[in-house]
Image (cartoon, rainbow, N blue to C red; front, side):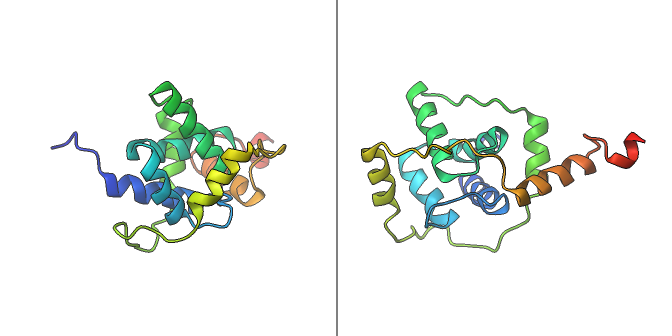
Length: 155
């Protein structure tokens, strides 16, 4: 069926986006984080939440978690980006090394997230500008797509 949701593909894309754009994942890796999110939120939301965080310029694990919590509260996805942004961002994500999607990760990710939620800890600098490396990747994508003018084109 064409309408079936590709769970493994969505998980792999979420992991690839987190890695490629250099999200701050506390002391965890992208695979662990995505597997943990899967236990709490609908799998179909994970990739979209990472894209929404990218669109908002928020490159931290907690930012994606805040987006997922707000969607859970509303009981629906609320994306601000459009299909053009999505295709632009996803077109440059390199294929990642294959990993096992069936083996749940080990670690204390659940404890660190629960502790942060219990203490209400939210960093004052939660809204951060893009990491320079990520900014350069996004700028290169935009230039390739002809979205912005380079200095030479302006003259």
